[in-house]
Length: 268
Length: 296
Image (tube, rainbow over all chains, first blue to last red; front, side, top):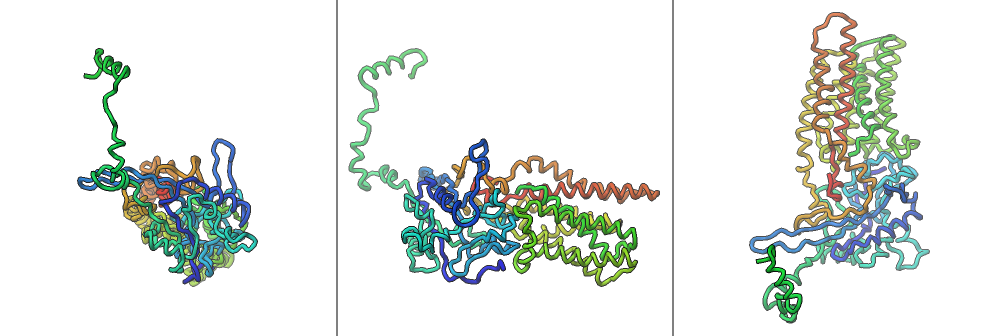
């Protein structure tokens, strides 16, 4: 039955640090690489070398620009570019599970991972319709729904060295922006990270109670702002030396500049 | 949402078919023999044809039978179960009417209830989705499916006075659905700010999509092309589905042949009109996942 478990023993999931992510897409590639040749049907591509390529991915990295607004006399801070990896959030109240007509979608009691039993999936697509995050994609070659498995075939795999028993995206992230662990255990590293950094849910109003958390980016513009203020912070020690020595051009180029300005149509 | 032809055909045709079965089950008209055969043939062609069309949009149609198992939690599964039970019940009732010239009122009433319940379960597949605010309107979305199905059913069953009333009701529901639906996304509270969780920091703008090409999500959920002629299609759909059939019913004509021709015109116009509004039902529906792509 596709009823959701009332409670799961553990809540395995990811914590994604938006402050650290550099948007290199390495997690996207390692995810596709691992999952296309392991659990379930391969992640197919259509027209991969043609004019209109597309394919199935379980993890995609978006990039957003955030423009802080001017506040009173305070001018607006510089816009910030935030890279935003997005995959299945393994929601506690996963709507994709309950809509499934065949029981192919299920949430595991032992660790909370949401999985698709591909031999039962009829490819109706309703689970993808019910997911607000776009975490599920119908594979056009296999005709079944694909989604993040939290690398269920890695994390318990005793044939792998211990350091590899994490999802492929976590293992590969060169910036250390992805963390894996039990978010149901308040003493776990990931839970403490979430508490410390104010980890947040995506679309909380949709009522899905996602397990995965996102750590908000730290403000990036404080150093520049400190430099603007007089007598505050280390940067002011060097600031006088960094000031432009002269605004006026000298030498031959200076003469040329002034001479050209004097011609009709020049400045002043 | 992508207005996939199989899904439009399914909701339009099976809605009409089950609407007709509803009236036949109530003995409106209480036909027997060959006339009953023709009525039931039309009803089953529409209802079963629609259901078969819906399997065309499955990735693995050969496994469709597995969809009968999850009636406890899934509206799609409930719809499949309800449709089969309704068709079997009305099948028995039809055998009585066609071959035995008898009506079993209890069986007919049960079949009528199951038929209209099937239309309700269809509507709930869409109405349950919080991710599509325009569909997530209870009771308006179920009301739209039910009134259109009943109006079409009455039209096909030749129940002129009932059809007139139900067409007016369906027309009003359609207008209310459009009116409230146009505001649904903005009042849902889901924005790019809540989608990214970055809204408290400033104005969020989608800077770069994950891939330069398209993908399943954009093809399925961000279908902007279909909305291009939305305003015109609303007028066309409303006129064909509601206004023209009403005019055909209201015209005072004497001859039986002319009456039948007008009724045929009303039914045809209604079917095309409902298909047109169903196209808009999908094409105008915006999924919240589009926000991640800076689109709707």
